[in-house]
Image 1 (spheres, rainbow, N blue to C red):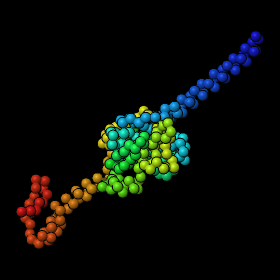
Image 2 (image 1 turned 180 degrees about the vertical axis):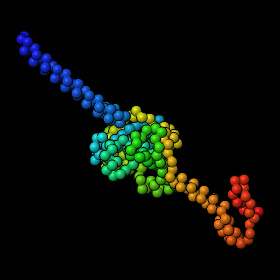
Image 3 (image 1 turned 45 degrees about the vertical axis):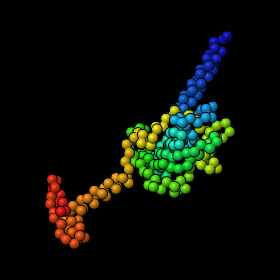
Image 4 (image 1 turned 45 degrees about the horizontal axis):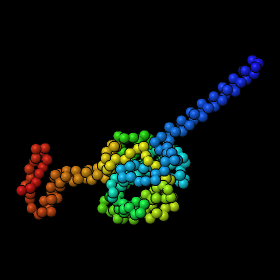
Length: 258
């Protein structure tokens, strides 16, 4: 074997090794980018267990691979379930396009098992967590929470519809409550991320404020201060049609009453 041939062989081996290394790096980066949402094709869920957390996606959606939505579902007991839609993992471009914030939708509902399917019957709670699009949403992140219940559970079910964990062939998937959705989910997988056992425990993972509650609290405080003011006391005196004794409390506020 000549020296020239040895040098050529060495170059070929070197190029081959570099190619293999590059492919390994690219594959590793792709797996890191997918993170906890990467799902193995050979782990379709064939049995639903109470207390287990399942993850699903919708490959038939118009979203790109990196912007696909993921949701989680868990049967809390034999009557109640938790369903979480995570909209915080999209690309920066996704949020900039429409000026959207990052959101997590948390639903608690009741279900009934019919055959091998688990069909939602009512909503117990329906809340949306909103976060700035500029932050990485992790435990402890600051945001807002809004409730869409307020005693309108039946109407909400009519508007938002319900869901079902449907047995389809040899696996389970998420479908609409009537099992007629045109876009059912891909097969359910066992999730590495585990949902807690209650809505309260889920919300406690974040630093949240309720804008409606804060608004109501501010309104109540403003009314309290008004009725303690001279103007408020005069209005009440006119309403009752007689003079009301006025005194001051330990904080210097005027208090009226007999």
